Image (tube, rainbow, N blue to C red; front, side, top):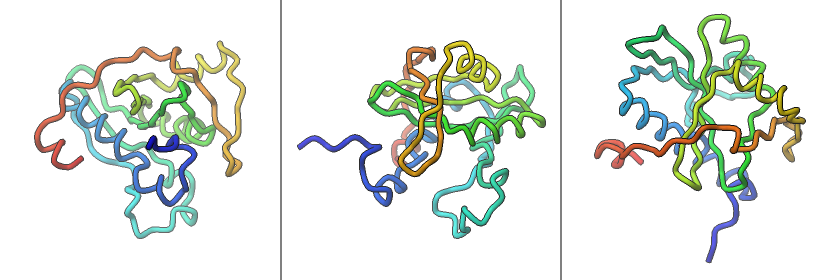
Length: 169
């Protein structure tokens, strides 16, 4: 029997997976490309009540990263499913703009259906949304998002995971 689409499953079922698969994909890519990284974002298992935190803390980027050629930058990891749309919350973009006052912000998107990834700097993402006149849509919980067609991203194959990463997955 075919599983229902991820976004139609109950919230309690989805929270167990949110971010985990995409973050593992990012860590695989970072290791493959020699990107140094440090976890910055909050884990779902945190005992803290997310809603009680200021949005700037609650929505901080997932990682701070650095390559041998570039200074530090933040990475915001997003997942994308089989519907062909990358849904980026307006809140995520707004908060990323504040973090960009410290360092540039790059979005890493993992397409779990096709096992591909794409990256886009925040400024490029904002320009794409404006250029393509992408109108905000609304999730069932009232949160607004930009439905960015996946065709607007340049996709890459995911490198093979290390044995340690496979064991953790």
